[in-house]
Amino acid sequence: MGLADALRERAHGPALWAALGALAFAASAAADSARLATVEMLEDAAARLTAEEAAGDPGFRPLPGARLNAGYSRSAFWLRLELPAAAAAGERIVVEVAAPVLDRVEAFARVDGPWRLLGAAGDGVAFSARALPHRQPAFAIALAPMPTTVLVRLASEGSLTAPVRVWSEGGFHANAATDNLFFGCYFGFLAAMLIYNLFLFASIRDRAYLWYVAYVAALMLLQAKLAGYADQYLWPDAPALANPANLLAFAAVVVCGAQFTRSFLRRAPSARWARRLIVAGQVSAAAAASLLLVASYRLATQVLLAVTVGVIAVLVAAMVKAYRGGYRPARFILLAFAALAVGAAAMILRQFGAVGFDFPAERVFDAATAAEALLLSFALGDRINALEAERRGVEAALDALQERLPGALLEAQDREREHMAAELHDAVGQNLVVVGSRIRALAASPRYGSDASPALTEIADINRETLDQVRTMARSLHPAELDRLGLARAIRMMAERATAESGLDFHAALGATGDDLPPDRRLQLYRIAQEAVTNAVKHSRARRLTVAFGAERGRVYLAVADDGTGFDPAAVGASMGLATMRQRSAMLNASFAVETAPGAGTVIRVLVPLPGAS
Image 1 (cartoon, rainbow, N blue to C red):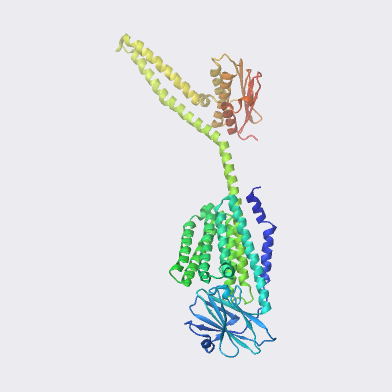
Image 2 (image 1 turned 120 degrees about the vertical axis):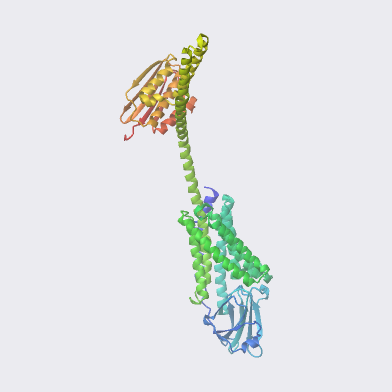
């Protein structure tokens, strides 16, 4: 078993399924200690209100489900939370805005006196400068003996989607630990898939694996950014990288995912039409990310989202077309798209309030991306199986071609010989006959006198000799007597001519005519007999040659025997004559045997089944 096979076997083994189990457990283990506070919302269209001005504005209205969903808005939004009085001295709560990609979130509180800033958070704020060192904007607030009003201001160039959760301090940290466990399993699983497929690429050198690795790496970066871990661990002191990194990671997921699919479809002829569209989508995604150099982050993100929708539509259509065209590995890609669609649907339903606040939509989306990565890896494994099956099919076809090629060459050679024999007989032979008749007429004519007769006689002799040679050549190319006399008599005539001047004592035992065989099969059997007789005349040093031909038990048999010196079959090996006889026997579906030994003579035996014989 090679490295690739071993790794592939491990990929489908218990280890990865255990990782999936841990992932699912972490996804279902979200702490439920969050409790909703009464939250009201005010839109600041000019984004200029201070905390004092916002607090006095009568435009606050209830925010259902404590979830802000303003989309891509240029406004700032103020949230007003009424917190209960402290139940115990020193009691603290945590207000969490579950949106790590918001640019800036600020919290203000007032107990007695003016509003004061509790702190700032968001991916536009350095991690060390955040109010609470956490991946999501969060603010720890000490409750007063009386109810406390808290204002939270949100502004972002990206989408303003922000669930607000109020936790006890212990519940917040317990939930953070659950989150870390879940994302530890999630990113660990993706890292395992990345490393595993990187090893496969190093072993197999299939670029589809390399693009899979690039896609998973880009997906890990994007998910780390969306979850807030990238801001916490990768660039904690460089908040200016937050938005560009988010956009570039998103574009990299689109480009690498599309390139993976394009490479994957290389073996699917039915989906070739999609390749140019995929390339156009990749170029468009890169161009959308480049808009950040000349336009706002908001515009670049919106363009990239529109391009992504188009790319996904092309990829799904291409995979459906490939699967319908018989490319079975595409089914795993379609399942991966389906898993991702489930996760995206959960997020959309959560954003639009179709499911409750406690529904773990983010976890469903993360689990869906993990399932997608696994299914894409399965698709690669299935593609290897398909390529292996294709390779075996090609090898089988080549083997069949190699077995059939010598017979096809012999058939073509026989057809060409028949054509040449006909041309020699009908064209050259007839012309020579005409020339001979004209010469004889000239020789008999008194017009040329007796002086021309010797020359004309010599020409006539040459013409007759040439005609005999042409007829001999035509006969050797294609035995005309085979069509005229039948197989048995043609074999006898051929053997008599071959042995006429050799001194061999020839004996024929003809028990059938061979007319039951089709013409092409009669020709092949005649050529086998011709080759066997020629070999005996030239090499056997025999005194006697016997050719037997007959029919018995639904088979035609041919035997050519001599009492010559024989030979060692192992020493002769695959000589051209023996190889040709064997090949012609195979074309006849006949058995072929050579019985010989040094000093014991040689017998060539062929048994040909008659048409319709069982």
